[in-house]
Amino acid sequence: MERNQLEPSNRVTQCLSFILKTRVVVFAGSLAQRLTSMLLMLVFTAFAFVVLAASVVVVTGESFVKRVLSLAKAPKKESWQNLIKDEPVSPH
Image (cartoon, rainbow, N blue to C red; front, side):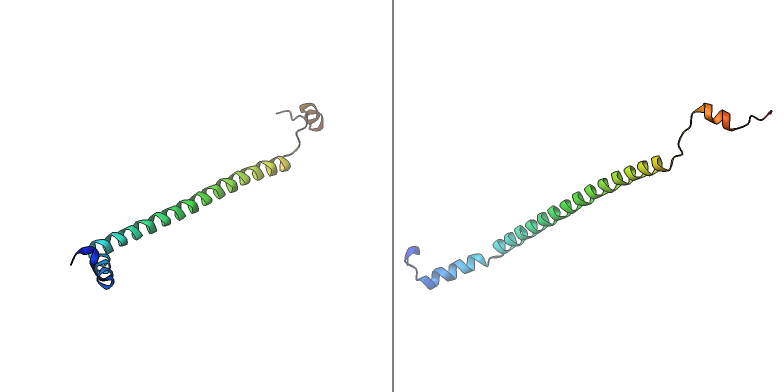
């Protein structure tokens, strides 16, 4: 029989036997594994970027708050003339 005159059941059998060959299965498995690992790398990279951005925001905010609090707690500087008038000079 010629190839194009095969019965439909024989065509299905040949297609299934081709698909079930180990080369095709191994190729499909490696492709699935590669796609899975690429997806995981993308997810972890996005997560790392989010953590990095959050860290930068927190550190910048902490620095800003420290600066504002240190300015608020700092004693007011008086002029040196007022300091001299208010404190007696010791003879040492």
